[in-house]
Length: 138
Length: 138
Length: 138
Length: 138
Image (cartoon, rainbow over all chains, first blue to last red; front, top):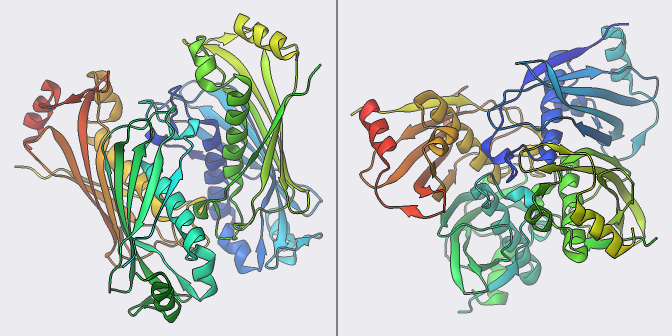
């Protein structure tokens, strides 16, 4: 089974730094989303791909552990890894590192489900997603 | 002609304060939106009211003047005033004040137009908006 | 031992709703923060209280479970509950409910640590926090 | 006199698109800030450069005109141009375009002033800024 992952450099915005002079914890959801969107573009599982198949994939779980503060002058990298599962879910792990020394600044985990256009939960993998999994051997 | 206005207290969030320890200027768009939504609820011109009539009202202009910084421990008030116009537009002025001394912290101005559900600009006032103006005498 | 908690009504902003027409998951960090700030004001453990004692209390963990989508026209309530611990940490649980039917829309969990003004982790409870715990019997 | 400018590609985030399926107007402040930070890095006038000289440069004016909606699948470019002035101010113009057809999606304008670390307005150009202007012939 393949391991699908991609790394994305982050540009810290002045407005993302709070009065402790560190990046506000709530912005990490955006960093993880940046990674998820890069993954979607790279592997053909983007929001518009999924939407074009008639589905939404809202998050049902998101967690983050903040190991070290991110400062304004850092240029961290977020790496997203696809975690295969038999459930009708999309599961990712995230790791934000400082490329200068490789230190882990934060980790994260997200779980998404499939909803149809009427916001009804879909209990089995949609066919397009089964095809996607076969194509990438995950 | 009546003057329609409403005042809304603002609660400053920790995450809205930047590393200068003042509210980041970009958040004022949200404060003005809070005022616009309160106005919509009060006078029946909310996003869902307008959407239910088959229209969007996107902003085409927004400006702000920042007179004095807003600090975390302030409890400012934003006042929104409807500015009647003959054009097919919705125009508002905004004023953010510190209620402790009445000082003006910021002012703002916004212009919205009408778009139909296919994102086409509407050049004449929709009928529901003409009725709304008559009802409120503006 | 007492159970310290407080409930805060949430006002959903138009800009918090994404193109799925539901509140974007990243905004829940702000809702939890609103609850945490209300708790701080109510029980004297606000950001400025803690800062005045010479400490920051950054988050080291945040997790959320999204049970049901929050729509623009909802008026949900977030309840924050203080979870006593012997570690030098501040731990909260969160629950967002729809007051119309009591349904749970989301839950959350956060862990904060103490850092001094030089961003060094503090391993034992600061004295002011020990006093605070005694005062509230937690 | 030279014209200092720089262009920056924008990556539209899913969370920046609102329920009209267009980018929420408030995010343009962030796009302009991205441009301002790129300008600062390119020409040595970044937030940390200025802060290192003992000054803040808060915005006192920001305005935007929204010509055409930005959609999720666009890859617009923001161009920032420095506007020389004799006043103790930093003035920029902004233009967001769609590189596929060159169409102007939005324009903007910002004015910043100099404040010292005690949040007092500085009425004359700080020396480092005079030097910066001479160096770049603006």
